[in-house]
Length: 197
Ligand code: HEM
Image: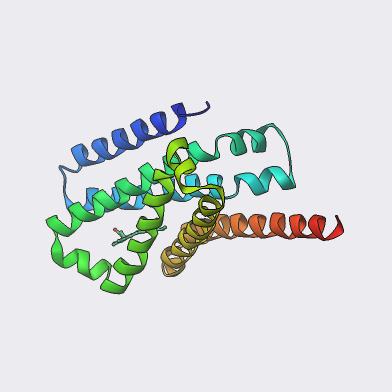
């Protein structure tokens, strides 16, 4: 599967999953919380695949990493769809159970995680060729570099505070750390090559 088909099919699957959860839970709070948790996890997987794509191919070029690199933009857009469903379910939770919503989050979290959504919206908008051309190559690179690492930190904070809740969060953290380390290793290798040239 390649190109726009990827976000197309992943969006369909995510919307179908959210619809099925809402239908079986009759739109109750537990159903909304399940959608929030599931989309956080699908977002993590899609984000890591997009975030580490270029570095993976630099460190270990093979058919899989080349596919990942070729589809980096579409993996990023799929991540955005998943994470905007996370946001939609959060807004629904705030409306359905205002008190529970404020027990689960706070203003500082909303401001910091909200900034991740600003980056995500800007990065998604500039995933289209015309918007990318308008922004210019060096601004595009800066936006995607800063945005990528800001979202990486947002995941680290969201997962880090849930580590005492069980091994699934340790596995999620391991995946996130692996993506960060792979990016740093590829960067160090590039710097070494440039220094030798
Ligand atoms: C305004 C923005 C956001 C708010 C208010 C928010 C709120 C929440 C809440 C309340 C939960 C727990 C749901 C539950 O236990 O039922 C949650 C889970 C989570 N969120 Fe968000 N979130 C926001 C944005 C983000 C962002 C930007 C990220 C990462 C980039 C993120 C990653 C996660 C993760 C990893 C979980 C854990 C899911 C699990 O239990 O597996 N969230 N969020």
